Length: 101
Length: 426
Image 1: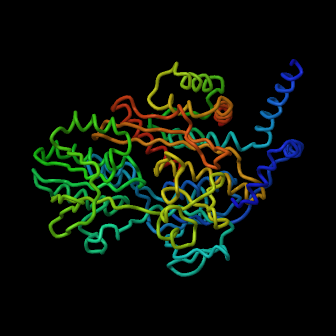
Image 2: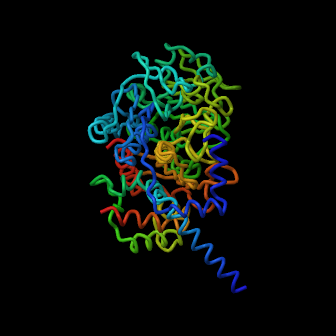
Image 3: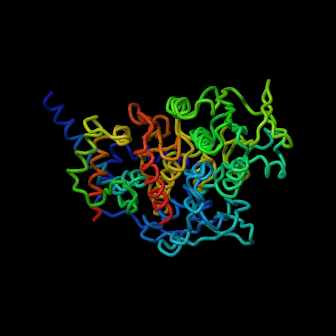
């Protein structure tokens, strides 16, 4: 049983590494789904009233997304959208925007 | 994507595939090279053109063929009809796509696609060769379904205003010329059509105008559908609270014909006379898609592969936007066309580099509708690729509609427009 869970853990680790290593564009593609409202690469038009995402610390935006997803943080549309992404996807998105300086 | 490619991709999912790919994960992807022709500069095509240049670090050549000198947005155009926005507010140029992103803009019309030769024929003369073609042609109308409107003269009088531009201005003028006490009749076709909540937004904004300027007037919605197609509860509540006695909603009222001279809508068992008759006709993929041999579903919408937006039967032709047969519950919206354009751009760059597309694409939709000049409501959804069905499927438990109309969402809707326009054109 122990060996099995170790194997499962190894497989999960490998597959998550694989998902990121094999697809360097995955984070970029996922983040692009946010750009309609938040601007290309997370830089909205000045004065549009929509939050910028570019350059926001990963820990900060990931927490915000997690709170939208769990329902802890109220909002008009983001709670509904955040629920559509897996935790791994949200992590990739948050990391991508954090890297946009 | 061809079946061959799909099988190759599935094979890559096996353990052997994992090890092989993981073994060379350190090496960078090959650089995409080639020429992509994009047909149609709307929400889908303009976005595709920009993202192909941006994501290839300007390595891939892009030519955008668009017949209009400017982009005029359908989203927000109902506000022009209602009188709270001007045409200038919803009109943007293609200049920056050219000057900043290096997209070659050709203001012309594509007459035909030669998929074997990988070229398109231009109305202005000459052919454009492509390595990959992006077709984002929008919709055309099925005029033969409304015999009285199946001629140019009738279409100049009884307007659709379902493609923003001259018709938007003309419908606004008809509304302004309507006497107080007049009847504005809006005919809604059976779904699917472009922009599911759009007709109900238009009814709201016309009623908003009437309430302020011509309070004895009426707005009659003749809906071919059994009920309001999108944001039903929110529209019904807004109409009951904001426009009692102004909006009259009639479901199951499919338009069969029109008497142009008397502006009368003919239904199965009824006739409705209008002072302004606004007919949104039934729709299908634009002519260029329909006559190019692309596989259609229900003889109306282009069938595509959801990993690449590539036509199911015509290699190297990627189709976007309102012209395609959509995924379950996926609306024909500008937002969705923009998302599909990014999916296609990412896939095309991979294919041009000799690689396989991202095997797990995600799309999302947001539609804002105004119920008066300031208050808006939304609907949202998220779609994840499903290997079993080969289609992007709506995520259960995600998405939804506004809890109530609000000025806050009205301001967010205005911000949405600014940002999506910039995302496609700037």
